[in-house]
Picture 1 (cartoon, rainbow, N blue to C red):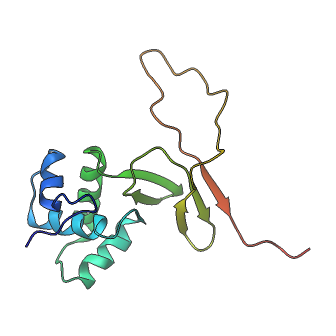
Picture 2 (picture 1 turned 90 degrees about the vertical axis):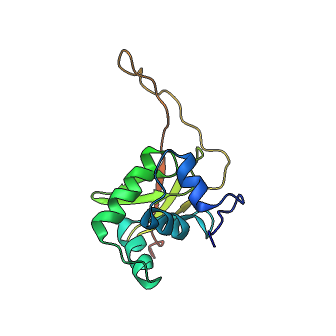
Picture 3 (picture 1 turned 90 degrees about the horizontal axis):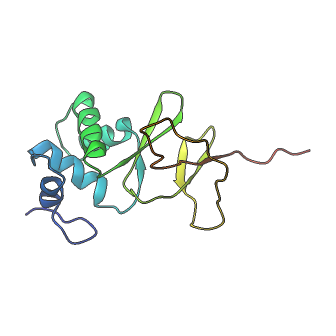
Length: 142
């Protein structure tokens, strides 16, 4: 049985429609990514989930698949903490909160976030997206 994504399309079909060959490992990783709705995962977190689910896959294969999914438009990449990268299954335009020290990231509910006075892009280029990450920490007692 081939698992379904939240929109009722099989994971196999979703991978195929993105222009990728639905290998066993890609389909297994896509199922882990998309079966639980919108989420933010690092490659290491997905690798741990895959191993726990009995999917024999290397961390390098997970990285490769995540980057292939991103290039195919299935994921959105979020660089938050230096070398720490998250992959977002929600590819719509939206912004994020990041809790420092906990490495947790979650969506900002759509609302009054406004970006103004963007610079003019270089010739031949256009702005395709603006990512806002609002960093949070517990309030300090004063």
